[in-house]
Amino acid sequence: MVRVVIIATWNVNSIRAREARFLAFLERWKPDAVCLQELKVEDAQFPVMQLKGVGYHAAFHGQRTYNGVAIVAKEEHALEDVQIGLGDDVEDDHARLIGATVGGVHLLSAYFPNGGNMGSDKYAYKLAWMKRLRATLDRRFTAKDPVALLGDYNVAPFPDDVADPDELEGTVLANPEVRAALLHIADFGLEDVCRPFHPEGGVYTWWDYRARGFERNLGLRIDHVYATGSVAARVIGAAVDREERHGKGASDHAPLLVELREH
Image 1: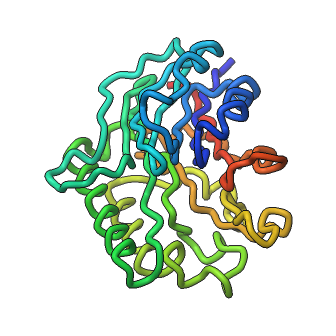
Image 2 (image 1 turned 180 degrees about the horizontal axis):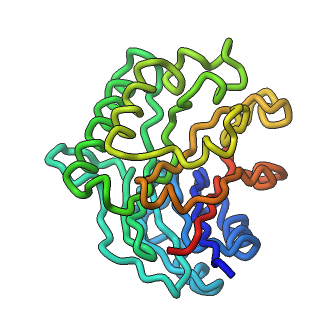
Protein backbone atom coordinates (compact mmCIF):
# COMPACT_ATOMS: atom_id res chain seq x y z
CA MET A 1 0.00 0.00 0.00
CA VAL A 2 1.28 3.46 -0.91
CA ARG A 3 1.39 5.73 2.11
CA VAL A 4 -0.20 9.15 1.63
CA VAL A 5 1.43 12.23 3.09
CA ILE A 6 -0.88 15.13 3.92
CA ILE A 7 0.33 18.72 4.01
CA ALA A 8 -1.97 21.67 4.60
CA THR A 9 -2.09 25.43 4.83
CA TRP A 10 -4.46 27.50 6.93
CA ASN A 11 -4.73 31.17 7.76
CA VAL A 12 -6.15 30.76 11.25
CA ASN A 13 -6.69 34.49 11.83
CA SER A 14 -5.42 34.22 15.45
CA ILE A 15 -4.10 30.94 16.85
CA ARG A 16 -5.37 32.00 20.27
CA ALA A 17 -8.93 32.33 18.98
CA ARG A 18 -8.68 29.17 16.88
CA GLU A 19 -6.60 26.94 19.17
CA ALA A 20 -9.35 24.43 19.98
CA ARG A 21 -10.42 24.28 16.34
CA PHE A 22 -6.84 23.71 15.21
CA LEU A 23 -6.23 20.91 17.71
CA ALA A 24 -9.47 19.24 16.57
CA PHE A 25 -8.38 19.68 12.95
CA LEU A 26 -5.12 17.86 13.70
CA GLU A 27 -6.98 15.03 15.42
CA ARG A 28 -9.43 14.70 12.52
CA TRP A 29 -7.07 14.84 9.53
CA LYS A 30 -3.77 13.80 11.15
CA PRO A 31 -1.76 15.82 8.61
CA ASP A 32 1.97 15.30 8.46
CA ALA A 33 2.61 19.05 8.33
CA VAL A 34 0.53 22.22 8.43
CA CYS A 35 1.63 25.73 7.52
CA LEU A 36 -0.19 28.42 9.50
CA GLN A 37 -0.55 32.13 8.89
CA GLU A 38 -1.82 35.11 10.88
CA LEU A 39 -0.93 33.69 14.27
CA LYS A 40 -1.38 37.14 15.85
CA VAL A 41 0.60 36.14 18.96
CA GLU A 42 4.17 36.57 20.13
CA ASP A 43 6.29 33.43 20.32
CA ALA A 44 5.75 33.05 24.07
CA GLN A 45 2.00 32.65 23.51
CA PHE A 46 2.25 29.97 20.81
CA PRO A 47 0.57 26.75 22.09
CA VAL A 48 3.63 24.51 22.19
CA MET A 49 2.47 22.24 25.01
CA GLN A 50 -1.03 21.87 23.61
CA LEU A 51 0.43 20.69 20.30
CA LYS A 52 2.74 18.30 22.09
CA GLY A 53 -0.31 16.82 23.78
CA VAL A 54 -1.66 15.68 20.40
CA GLY A 55 1.71 14.53 19.01
CA TYR A 56 2.91 17.62 17.14
CA HIS A 57 5.73 20.13 17.38
CA ALA A 58 6.34 23.40 15.57
CA ALA A 59 8.68 26.08 14.32
CA PHE A 60 7.12 29.51 14.53
CA HIS A 61 7.74 33.19 13.96
CA GLY A 62 5.15 35.17 15.86
CA GLN A 63 4.20 38.82 16.10
CA ARG A 64 1.89 40.57 18.50
CA THR A 65 -1.54 41.43 17.05
CA TYR A 66 -0.50 41.03 13.42
CA ASN A 67 1.00 38.51 11.02
CA GLY A 68 2.88 35.47 12.33
CA VAL A 69 3.65 32.17 10.60
CA ALA A 70 4.37 28.60 11.68
CA ILE A 71 5.11 25.11 10.45
CA VAL A 72 3.52 22.39 12.56
CA ALA A 73 4.54 18.76 12.04
CA LYS A 74 4.04 15.36 13.60
CA GLU A 75 6.69 14.71 16.22
CA GLU A 76 7.97 11.80 14.13
CA HIS A 77 9.03 14.32 11.46
CA ALA A 78 12.03 16.44 12.38
CA LEU A 79 11.88 20.15 11.61
CA GLU A 80 15.28 20.76 10.06
CA ASP A 81 17.08 23.81 8.68
CA VAL A 82 14.56 26.28 10.09
CA GLN A 83 14.88 29.70 8.45
CA ILE A 84 12.94 32.78 9.51
CA GLY A 85 12.20 35.70 7.26
CA LEU A 86 13.27 36.55 3.74
CA GLY A 87 16.91 36.79 4.74
CA ASP A 88 17.70 39.89 2.73
CA ASP A 89 19.09 43.28 3.80
CA VAL A 90 15.73 45.07 3.82
CA GLU A 91 14.58 46.35 7.21
CA ASP A 92 11.23 44.66 7.73
CA ASP A 93 9.73 43.58 11.05
CA HIS A 94 6.72 41.78 9.54
CA ALA A 95 6.59 38.07 10.52
CA ARG A 96 5.56 36.70 7.14
CA LEU A 97 7.82 33.78 6.23
CA ILE A 98 9.24 30.69 7.88
CA GLY A 99 10.83 27.66 6.25
CA ALA A 100 11.84 24.19 7.41
CA THR A 101 12.65 20.84 5.89
CA VAL A 102 10.05 18.20 6.79
CA GLY A 103 10.31 14.67 5.42
CA GLY A 104 12.80 15.74 2.78
CA VAL A 105 10.66 18.62 1.46
CA HIS A 106 11.53 22.26 2.04
CA LEU A 107 8.27 23.76 3.29
CA LEU A 108 7.74 27.51 3.31
CA SER A 109 4.83 29.02 5.21
CA ALA A 110 4.11 32.44 3.71
CA TYR A 111 1.71 35.21 4.58
CA PHE A 112 1.76 37.59 1.63
CA PRO A 113 0.79 41.21 2.37
CA ASN A 114 -2.84 42.07 1.71
CA GLY A 115 -2.04 45.35 0.03
CA GLY A 116 -4.71 47.57 1.50
CA ASN A 117 -6.03 49.66 -1.38
CA MET A 118 -4.83 50.10 -4.94
CA GLY A 119 -2.17 52.80 -5.17
CA SER A 120 -1.46 52.82 -1.43
CA ASP A 121 1.87 52.37 0.34
CA LYS A 122 0.63 48.98 1.53
CA TYR A 123 0.05 47.93 -2.07
CA ALA A 124 3.56 49.03 -3.05
CA TYR A 125 4.90 47.03 -0.11
CA LYS A 126 2.97 43.97 -1.29
CA LEU A 127 4.51 44.10 -4.76
CA ALA A 128 7.97 44.71 -3.33
CA TRP A 129 7.57 41.83 -0.85
CA MET A 130 6.57 39.44 -3.62
CA LYS A 131 9.64 40.46 -5.60
CA ARG A 132 11.79 39.91 -2.53
CA LEU A 133 10.26 36.45 -2.05
CA ARG A 134 11.29 35.47 -5.57
CA ALA A 135 14.83 36.66 -4.81
CA THR A 136 14.81 34.55 -1.63
CA LEU A 137 13.83 31.46 -3.62
CA ASP A 138 16.62 32.15 -6.11
CA ARG A 139 19.13 32.55 -3.29
CA ARG A 140 18.17 29.49 -1.24
CA PHE A 141 17.03 26.89 -3.76
CA THR A 142 17.01 25.65 -7.32
CA ALA A 143 14.00 24.40 -9.24
CA LYS A 144 15.39 20.87 -8.87
CA ASP A 145 15.07 21.03 -5.09
CA PRO A 146 11.92 19.62 -3.40
CA VAL A 147 10.26 22.89 -2.38
CA ALA A 148 6.64 23.69 -1.49
CA LEU A 149 5.39 27.22 -0.87
CA LEU A 150 2.21 27.09 1.20
CA GLY A 151 0.21 29.98 2.49
CA ASP A 152 -2.13 32.87 2.17
CA TYR A 153 -0.86 34.54 -1.00
CA ASN A 154 -3.56 37.21 -0.97
CA VAL A 155 -3.77 36.76 -4.75
CA ALA A 156 -6.54 35.13 -6.79
CA PRO A 157 -4.60 33.84 -9.82
CA PHE A 158 -7.51 33.54 -12.26
CA PRO A 159 -10.77 35.42 -12.79
CA ASP A 160 -12.70 32.24 -11.94
CA ASP A 161 -11.00 32.26 -8.53
CA VAL A 162 -13.23 35.25 -7.78
CA ALA A 163 -16.89 34.54 -7.04
CA ASP A 164 -18.05 38.14 -7.37
CA PRO A 165 -15.96 39.90 -10.05
CA ASP A 166 -18.04 43.08 -9.84
CA GLU A 167 -17.05 43.41 -6.20
CA LEU A 168 -13.48 42.09 -6.08
CA GLU A 169 -11.95 41.97 -9.55
CA GLY A 170 -9.54 44.89 -9.91
CA THR A 171 -8.77 45.06 -6.18
CA VAL A 172 -5.40 44.44 -4.54
CA LEU A 173 -6.28 40.71 -4.45
CA ALA A 174 -7.27 40.26 -8.07
CA ASN A 175 -5.73 42.42 -10.77
CA PRO A 176 -3.25 41.93 -13.65
CA GLU A 177 -0.33 43.47 -11.71
CA VAL A 178 -0.49 41.15 -8.70
CA ARG A 179 -1.12 38.19 -10.97
CA ALA A 180 2.02 39.07 -12.93
CA ALA A 181 3.93 39.33 -9.64
CA LEU A 182 2.72 35.85 -8.70
CA LEU A 183 3.71 34.51 -12.12
CA HIS A 184 7.19 35.92 -11.54
CA ILE A 185 7.39 33.87 -8.34
CA ALA A 186 6.04 30.77 -10.09
CA ASP A 187 8.58 31.18 -12.89
CA PHE A 188 11.20 30.10 -10.37
CA GLY A 189 9.90 26.63 -11.15
CA LEU A 190 6.78 26.31 -9.03
CA GLU A 191 3.45 24.76 -10.04
CA ASP A 192 0.02 25.41 -8.58
CA VAL A 193 -0.63 21.84 -7.42
CA CYS A 194 -4.29 22.44 -6.52
CA ARG A 195 -5.61 23.94 -9.74
CA PRO A 196 -5.34 20.68 -11.76
CA PHE A 197 -7.86 19.06 -9.41
CA HIS A 198 -10.33 21.92 -9.85
CA PRO A 199 -9.79 23.13 -13.43
CA GLU A 200 -13.18 24.80 -13.72
CA GLY A 201 -12.47 27.14 -10.81
CA GLY A 202 -15.17 28.15 -8.35
CA VAL A 203 -13.29 26.62 -5.40
CA TYR A 204 -12.60 29.21 -2.71
CA THR A 205 -10.55 29.40 0.48
CA TRP A 206 -11.67 32.76 1.89
CA TRP A 207 -15.06 34.35 2.45
CA ASP A 208 -15.76 37.74 3.97
CA TYR A 209 -17.35 37.67 7.42
CA ARG A 210 -19.65 40.47 6.30
CA ALA A 211 -22.85 40.18 4.27
CA ARG A 212 -23.03 36.39 4.78
CA GLY A 213 -20.16 35.87 2.34
CA PHE A 214 -19.73 32.20 3.19
CA GLU A 215 -23.41 31.35 3.12
CA ARG A 216 -23.68 32.98 -0.30
CA ASN A 217 -20.36 31.39 -1.39
CA LEU A 218 -18.96 34.76 -2.42
CA GLY A 219 -15.35 33.73 -1.93
CA LEU A 220 -11.86 33.95 -3.31
CA ARG A 221 -9.15 31.36 -3.88
CA ILE A 222 -6.21 33.12 -2.28
CA ASP A 223 -4.63 30.29 -0.22
CA HIS A 224 -2.34 28.11 -2.27
CA VAL A 225 0.25 25.37 -2.46
CA TYR A 226 2.85 25.85 -5.19
CA ALA A 227 5.65 23.32 -5.53
CA THR A 228 8.64 22.42 -7.64
CA GLY A 229 8.32 19.57 -10.11
CA SER A 230 9.66 16.79 -7.89
CA VAL A 231 6.99 17.56 -5.27
CA ALA A 232 4.20 18.37 -7.73
CA ALA A 233 4.68 14.97 -9.39
CA ARG A 234 3.76 13.29 -6.10
CA VAL A 235 0.46 15.17 -5.59
CA ILE A 236 -2.60 12.94 -5.87
CA GLY A 237 -5.29 15.20 -4.45
CA ALA A 238 -6.15 18.66 -3.18
CA ALA A 239 -9.25 19.94 -1.41
CA VAL A 240 -10.58 22.75 0.77
CA ASP A 241 -11.98 21.75 4.16
CA ARG A 242 -15.09 23.92 3.98
CA GLU A 243 -16.39 22.45 7.25
CA GLU A 244 -13.81 24.52 9.11
CA ARG A 245 -15.49 27.68 7.84
CA HIS A 246 -18.79 26.65 9.42
CA GLY A 247 -19.96 27.46 12.89
CA LYS A 248 -19.16 29.88 15.66
CA GLY A 249 -15.60 31.12 15.94
CA ALA A 250 -14.44 30.09 12.45
CA SER A 251 -11.56 31.80 10.69
CA ASP A 252 -12.50 33.66 7.53
CA HIS A 253 -10.21 31.19 5.71
CA ALA A 254 -10.67 27.43 5.33
CA PRO A 255 -7.76 24.98 5.36
CA LEU A 256 -6.39 23.71 2.06
CA LEU A 257 -5.12 20.11 2.16
CA VAL A 258 -2.86 18.39 -0.35
CA GLU A 259 -2.18 14.65 -0.55
CA LEU A 260 1.14 13.32 -1.81
CA ARG A 261 2.49 9.86 -2.45
CA GLU A 262 5.23 9.12 0.05
CA HIS A 263 8.63 9.69 -1.49
